[in-house]
Amino acid sequence: MNELLPIKNIFNNKDVVSIDQFDRASVEKLFTTTRRILKMSPSRRLNLLKGKLVTLLFFEPSSRTFGSFSAAIKRLGGLTIDYQNPTETSSAVKGETLEDTIKVFENYSDAIVMRHYEMGAAKRAADAALFIPVINAGDGSGEHPTQALLDGFTLRQELGKLDGLKGVLAGDLLYGRTVHSLIRLFNLFNNVTLYLLSPKNLRLPEELMKRFAKSNVKLVEIPTEKDIPRDCDFWYWTRVQKERFKDLKEYEKVKTRFILTPELVKERGNKNMLLMHPLPRVGEIDERIDSDPRSIYLNKQVKNGMYVRMGLLQLILGK
Ligand code: ASP
Image (tube, rainbow, N blue to C red; front, top):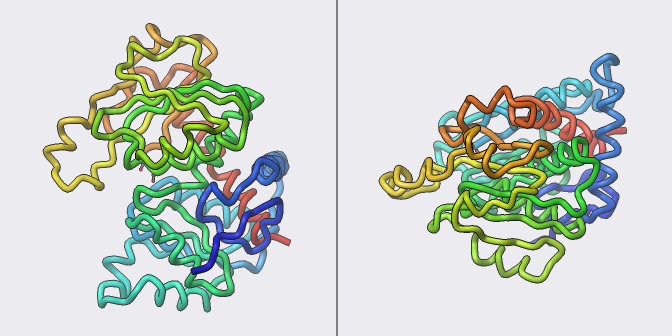
């Protein structure tokens, strides 16, 4: 099996499967490129991906990731083949393997952006594609690297740094792939403390707890919302991942165990903090907090998602 290539400042045609491929310099390079694109767009039509065709292969539902990749490619002058729900509409129904599907679309396009319901599927796809890069848009409860990159970029833009930050990661830390990637990203920076707040049966996987036990990122589990330190720079709330539960009764028990309310923010927050969420939210954020200027999940975070994906695609595929 092929090893995943580290990015190490060279993005050209590389697969992006995990944040583990990045070092700090590569993240900085992506942020710089994204800022440049942010300045040029949307007033100027960009042709950085002119002549490039990207397949969007989404085996699992998606609104933002699909939409923002599609917008990013088109805003850069490229084209897309859009394949949503191939599990229902493609030869996968007939029993085609993931590897075969990838090998076929490799003939049509210059890159594949793929979301899949199985952890590890992105790596399998990257191994199957011999000539073009594969970008992981979420693989089961594994990782969601581009979400972490956009979250990191947003924090950097808003707070001016990633070193030394203190934040809360709340909700489904077991199955939530966005937090799995975000912790890896923070580990590339210094002196970050993350307070982990989750129902007992949705704690961060033991393997990640162990891996980051002696790392740049300090992980501190807290039992209740009352234990959130008042001086956090951000709260990153997440949805309980219903689709990963075998027993829906178990999901019902925990789905809204932690709700972000204006009262909680008043009690445990501070005036400079940011309220973030990868979306979709399904009851774990009280809508009364939407109009609070500290809430950036429906605006800055979403918009940056498109720009960071533009930056990434430009570095991987652009001229
Ligand atoms: N949109 C994010 C993901 O695909 C978060 C979520 O679905 O809860 O992982």
